[in-house]
Length: 186
Ligand code: HEC
Image 1 (cartoon, rainbow, N blue to C red):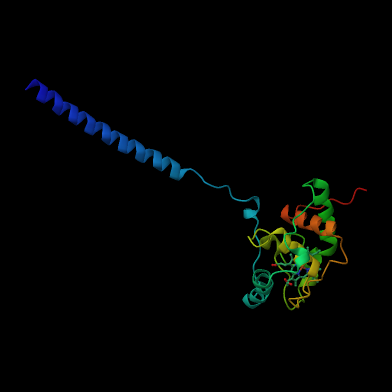
Image 2 (tube, helix red, strand yellow):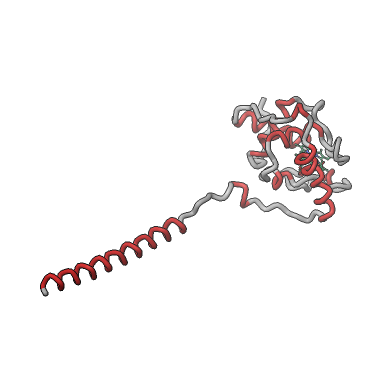
């Protein structure tokens, strides 16, 4: 009799213990799920005015389609930015960007430069495109070097006007989020 009673209590205890463990496991799982799993990119807060016609957007995608389906000339394949990630390179890129690109693409890369307004195909919103998964180094280097040669747009080709290093400096500046440009100190 006494032993039976003891066993009964034992069973009740282990049942209670099992319940506690299930609840505890549940609590742990909840904690893991609630933990933030990512930090938003620094550029996420920047607002990019839209306002481009959908047809222009579609035409613009011709460049992305070419890149994906036809590929790019062999001299651009797998090119990556060889520059050290220094402020000096970014600043140099900023000066080049204001002089050569901002007139069409806008100071902040929002596609609203003065000379871009009259173009048939509006200048790309670089601030938004630079964060896209397809905007790998070789894509940017090819786009800036060859311009609209293949897509027929008025985007100039810079492969003769700028050196490779200068093109990479501009890429670096765009990737840095179009920070304000200091005047050249020397
Ligand atoms: C005369 C105006 C003009 C100037 C100046 C200009 N662009 Fe463009 N750019 C365009 C237009 C229009 C497009 C969209 C059509 C296209 O992709 O060819 C474009 C597209 C691009 C793209 C491709 C964007 C995408 O969505 O794939 C990149 C990158 C780019 N420009 C970078 C630059 C840089 C960097 C400079 C300066 C060195 C520059 N552009 C100067 C007009 C210009």
